[in-house]
Amino acid sequence: MAELKYKRVLLKLSGEALAGEKQIGIDPHTVSKICAEIADVVDMGLEVALVIGGGNIFRGLSASAEGMDRSSADYMGMLATVLNALAVQDALEKTGHPTRVLSAIAMQEVCEPYVRRRAMRHLEKGRVIICAAGTGNPYFTTDTAAALRGMELKCDAIIKATKVDGVYDKDPMKHDDAVMFKHLSYEETLRRHLKVMDSTAITLAQENQVPIIVCNMFNGSIKKVVTGENPGTTVEGD
Ligand code: UDP
Picture 1 (spheres, rainbow, N blue to C red):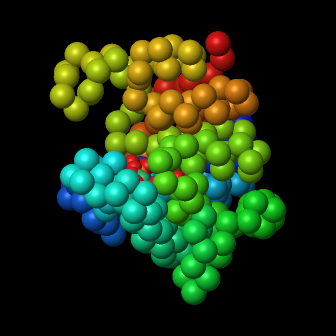
Picture 2 (cartoon, helix red, strand yellow):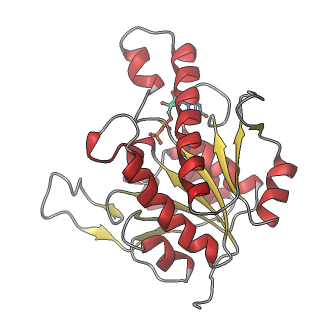
């Protein structure tokens, strides 16, 4: 079996990823496909903490642009991430892997509250943890939640799994001549406003020198990343 480069990673999935071709909502077939990729790396002994977005259901910023109170809209966005977390939990458990959903907003009938030391213990026991409800605070994003959880859970890397292969100089869905970066520094990513993660998340990773790796979520790339290959884009160093 290939050797792991990392012991523990934080894997960020955007909500949109779960919608598949539908763009909105949850597509169970797509969720199962993603979970099969996650199950593969868990079977290799990798400790995995997931942070899931909610953009396939509700985005606070868009709703506030339509006139809704920003904080209320953001709480709705955080609740959307809990729906996604439960869908991923279901699909992951069907692959035979124990999981725990840990929410930054308490809802004891549905899932455990996020308690850092408990989360660490689950990881040590080989359970996949799914961190829901973002940071629990409005005005943040799940990218920032991913960086935050990545730091406090002492993850060796943040993997952002997306529908495309990595970070490009322009949108690869719209431009045929878009060029993918293999390596980027945190500085350059921030300066060029490249769509890796939001700037708060990148700064947090930079301050703690934790690499951010962007890769495709469907074609075995996650496995390549955790065994030391760079199929997508790695952001690290200065
Ligand atoms: N959100 C929030 N605080 C957080 C994380 C998320 O208020 O710490 C809200 C925010 O409204 C955001 C929504 O939840 O628009 C969904 O998260 P995000 O947009 O990051 O999801 P993704 O784009 O990854 O699907």
